[in-house]
Image 1 (spheres, helix red, strand yellow):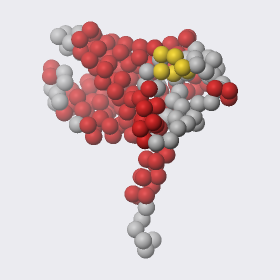
Image 2 (cartoon, rainbow, N blue to C red):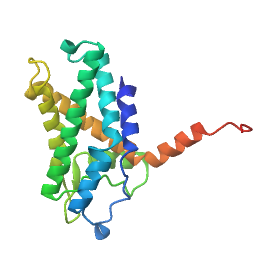
Image 3 (spheres, rainbow, N blue to C red):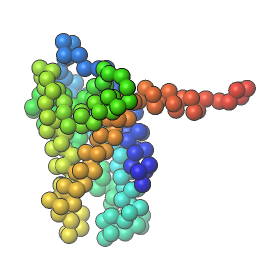
Image 4 (spheres, helix red, strand yellow):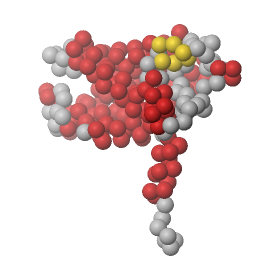
Length: 206
């Protein structure tokens, strides 16, 4: 189950730009056009949203949630549609609120070294971001997107699911998913080198 959930995080991270380490003196906030292009390339128009939607649908199909949709082909289609709608809402809420508040939706790699320090940075930036002045601030737009989309998704699930129960629970999972994507982004150079080494032809193979 964990592999099924983490695999799409690794795949999704490949569609997101990993920015260099944050340097306050050289920080330039995104303008309106850059935010729109980012939404097209990394959110609503990216292949990542399809990867995430199908992976989530596959997971919920395996655990048969919601039960009322069963494990039929029709149930899987409903789960894909539900997940896609939730992801689209989440990305749009995040990007639009970030634009309104002037916070940065991008992930900046850690300028540090060491597995634990870099991992801590990736997890920290699940909850924090930068404002127009380059100062760290609570990333309310990202959290609003994660919890808001999950609560909205619960409204079109079977009637016994509620936004304040299952919606919030799903929001917790979504925050964990964001953290996993940040970890994959942080270590993407190493992951890419590892995949390259694993896929290199054996010695003497043409």
